[in-house]
Image (tube, rainbow, N blue to C red):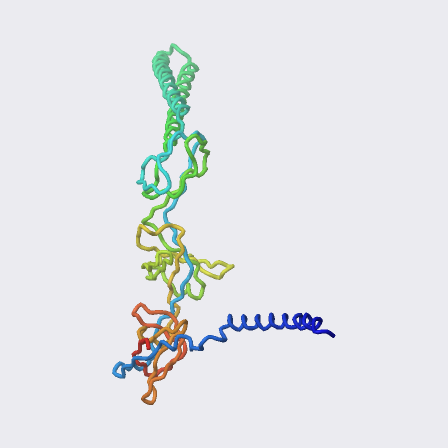
Length: 361
């Protein structure tokens, strides 16, 4: 075979090998094989230890707090509706407005009701005039009857006519009161001091009896409602003080149990607990909250937070043992308001901790 024929064959065999080698080198480079190997975070961390700050690890009695999902609700909340069928002529408030008790909220069309009220008044006048005439006629008939000039039948008719008109006058007066009451329904006023939550109608709409027009609540009556599992709920009492966490506000407020519904929900086996909270302008109905309830006590290892150094995502402390310091990894639990942290694993009671801080080489 000539050299000119062998050369293309060699090139055809070498090119795939070169491509494979190149790809392997690229994969190795991307995997970091050619990089200098360092232990994560340890190359920049040394311990500045102070033997005089040695602290012996001990156990402390902690209260187990169980957060129960809850929501902020208003104790005094109401839906505003109409008691008559009428067209809405004006609405004086919008969502977010603060209103006082007795304040006018909505006006309804009242021309027809005014006419009925005036008609009832005129009817009373007419019946009253007829009643005066019937009374005078009854007096005359009774005098004539004393003189034996009229029959007893005429006396009975006069008395019956007077009684009928008296009853008719009472009915007319009741109709007048009914018309005035219906007329008063054309002005819808706030039943409580509160804040408008939502507005469901606009001027020109027709208000029907029972139809929702506005909703409002008293912001001073906010409370937290939570379904608490029955074993935990049975340990609670009305008047007991609790703490409430409002995650969206990053705030914890005080609460006092106002009511415990004396019947468990058969589906979740829980009791509805209602606890009132202090007024705060930032609190709104429907907010998510957590009712913090004590579920017992436990003995846990707790250390100052400044004894822990974070290395990447790991937590490290320095332990003094046989007059030498050793780095030890620990797993932390909840953080205490006092600035201490709970240690779930990595330390035992009696261990001696040293004060340490990260120092750059």
